[in-house]
Image 1 (tube, helix red, strand yellow):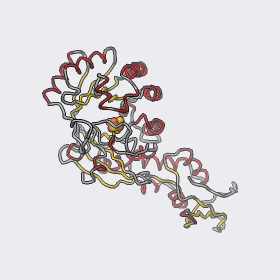
Image 2 (cartoon, helix red, strand yellow):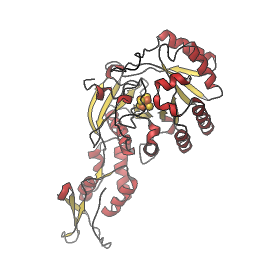
Image 3 (cartoon, protein in one colour):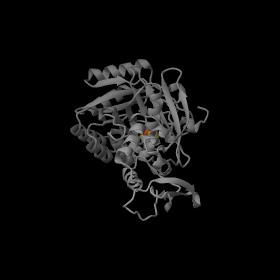
Amino acid sequence: MVFVLFVVNLTFHFPLSKIAPGAAGGSTICVQDRRTFGIVRAMPIAASTITIHDPPGVEALRKTLRLDPRVIRRVQAALCRAFLGANQALAAVPATERAAFAAAVRCHELTLERRRDSQRDGATKLLFRTADGQTIESVILRIQSGRSSLCVSAQTGCAGGCRFCATGRIQGGRSLSSAEILDQAIWAGELLAAEGRQLRNVVFMGMGEPLRNEEAVGTALDQLRSKHGLHLSDRHLLVSTLGIPDALRRLATRFPRVGFAISLHSARQAIRDDLMPLARHWPLPELRQAIRDVNALQDRPVMIEVLMLDGLTDTAADEEALIAWLQRLRVHVNLIPYNAIEGSDADHQPLRGSSETRIQEFLARLKAAGFETTRRHSLGTDIGAACGQLAEGRLNPDT
Ligand code: SF4
């Protein structure tokens, strides 16, 4: 947080023009009177700064620096919509105030440490480092039609503990701030803009359970939608969750046009409990009622994700249970082939993906029962960027 120690003389416009190192890693901004160029007052600012995505903080700074509100809007437009990068965004600030503004405001929350590009399908995995030294991953998906999507992370690990997910093996993670979530999209937007592409979709399908970081995810959605933020259409935003009923209802009430996907995987309680330990807190009937409530709030179907696991989620009993469970829900079912993850799970037999034949049979059965159903084609399997694989790079640094 910036702290500014001064008493403003409102009669004059004092551009802040010099920054000097201060004690404890802080800085001192020297305020000059334009008429005399003498130093009027020194304003120490803390080593920590505010993020550009903190509207009250930026507004307070704007007033302190006496910047025209249009200057802030130009910085945000350059950073969040034109994706020109921090340096060009800061060029929108008048030269006399630029150094002070740059010293007080962070345009990026994350450091982009590494990218891995698929040799097969146009996916790119981005590895970021947070200010406190944690790593997170996001995935750019370049679809043939020219549309580009980004899969963002909401946490640095996950307490979900799902057996099929690399992120669930990371202990001691934390939730990301809304600015850290948003910055994944800004970095991706910059990389895509350099290719002449545009970021169109943002899906919360990366590391972590978004609804266990509800407030930050809600704020990030606000900023992804805002005309002062990335100005993305609600239709192009999707939050995927294992299904925490109350949080799901709250978020769907707040964002009735944003899409939601439920990682169901099995409509048989015992199988789901075994695959997704955290989900045991919210039994299937409770989850089903929450989806009904979301259906009542939205005019788009809820996506139901089913991971196709040989002998576990793809049996005839699974078909029957799923079809019964989906009755009277407005849903789109998405069947997901299993992507193997490294590392052993001592308590269980290794998971095996369903055969393609079985996936197609399952798909045909659901369609015959009247449910819109598709098979997901995961991108980035060769770079550990497909569904369930994120954070594999952290567990196995060579990947
Ligand atoms: S699948 Fe989602 S909820 Fe489960 S461990 Fe992975 S990130 Fe967490």
